[in-house]
Image (cartoon, rainbow, N blue to C red; front, side, top):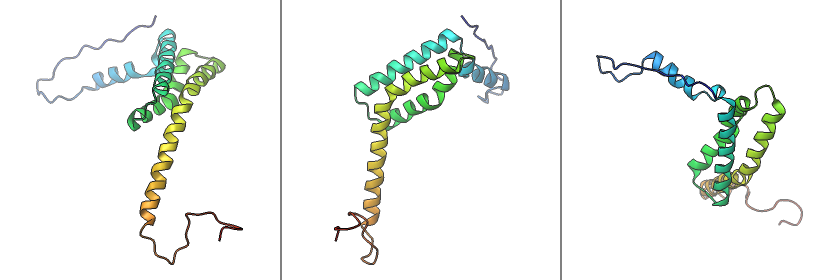
Amino acid sequence: MGTVSRYVGQVEESGSGRWTPAAAHAIDTARDPVRLPQAEARAWLETATLAVRACARTGQSDSDLLATIGRVVGRDARLVARAAYPGDPRAQERALDVLRAEHRPLAKYSLGRRIEREVRRRREAGAGESDDEPHRGGPVGRGSR
């Protein structure tokens, strides 16, 4: 099991409420996924996979939640996988593949919603087009006129 860094600070007499540089450093160090012990990093990956699976099964659609999950799967998990399987890129990639497979339905749903919003935005923006501009809403090519 890994060691936990401890920080003991004192309140500044000025009462400014600012973090001292030592406190900021201790917090950043504790939050760094690369510093996770292997067992904790592996547990993190397993928990993240279960959480993503639960979100996909229950049809979660909150845009903030989907964005957070995307960040966890896309960025955070890579860092944690390095801590979970240091020096073993194949094991890292296998762990990430499992997480990505669970994330895929949510990613497709999220992409579909972004496309729908963009189509809606373009339609609303196009409502004020003049008749001089070509129509882009229908098929183009042989037999379309």
